Image (cartoon, each protein chain N blue to C red):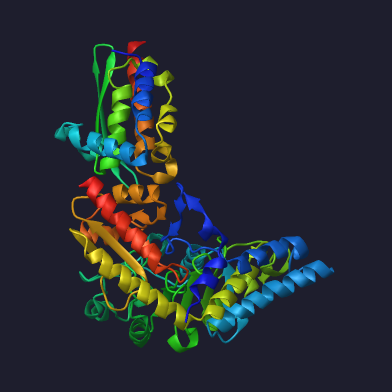
Length: 141
Length: 404
């Protein structure tokens, strides 16, 4: 598995091939549509993050020393961004997750979706991913 | 008639580019844009007049006080109110509602009943729930029909001698429905109940005559009618305002203070503790001057044309559902497209330079009623154009194609 940084660079490179916002958004919509992101058993209130705009469900489990995330949203663009976040953060060490940032989102032109004013649940989702990392890292120590 | 070219030149923000495209601002129900006539008044206040009011003997304080009180009189005249002291400056609609709700705890006992409409914004729900928790009074709800109007027969049945207060918005923020407040006020008064009307969404489109309405309390915000944020008003009948206790303690609201007892100032100062938003109050007056110079009849006529034009164009889109299609509504269209989340449409529109509101519009009970996560809401103002609507409809079509 590549490091978080390597995956982020890979995504930045992929996005640099898009000529305009339409292509970026079409790609995200494709991502959002194609991926089955979460087991329906986890699409419950226990795993929900309620944004004013869209809902997000996040579930985490430990696989060896790696954290695996699954997530979903009721809005397709939100779901596309979730797919990107999962590609970056899933299957990584809790320690690496804690040290990573999300600056790459600016570089691929999707910054506004990770702004708190959007209230789409994504900011809380990143927080949640970090929280899981904290909890599982404590278990290792 | 509206001179749209002249009007648009009054609003500097309308020439902004968003994502390389001309801004189309269709989020007027959230806040309206500010014409330079109002911006100039704010700049002039801080350039020439800035000082504290109602207390200084010096020239600046005198001039600032005069300007502030003149604005109060403008508001009084605009709403056809008998005395200027019945206009209380507040931070806006939400504070005005909280002021009345807080004061009313003095008059309520358990088992008293309050009636609210199902069309309310959260700011006209939560303060009354808090009041009920405090006093043991019971909150009853006038239900909504599928077309977005209030079920008036149920309202008549809810009224009884236990009813103390009725609150309803003049116009619904989520759907644009104009509520039959005249009828609500008359019927509530037959049972001795008082009525508070939230005019935040109505005042940008309608000029209400508060004496003719015989309403007990009427509240609104300046920022929805071309004024600045952070200022609004509470109107109340004289005897009601006199009997309500002060909301906040502080300077300006007192007559004499000793450590044993404080006597409160007369209206309106009893409710205006501390240094107010002076520039905001003056600009509120200027905003009303601006709107009146265009004329509310002209505004209503033009906005209605925009509404009909946009409604007809949107209806041609496959799978569209418009919420709250009643005859008597302001220039607001709340809609969804089948199988598409409103957030996704809003995100695409933003890329195209078009500002709309998406989400539950702080009116979750309405969204629950329709069993939807939210809507896309386009709200028009007299400075919007038919060309902008064409661009908007084209953009919604584009979003629908991308997202389907």
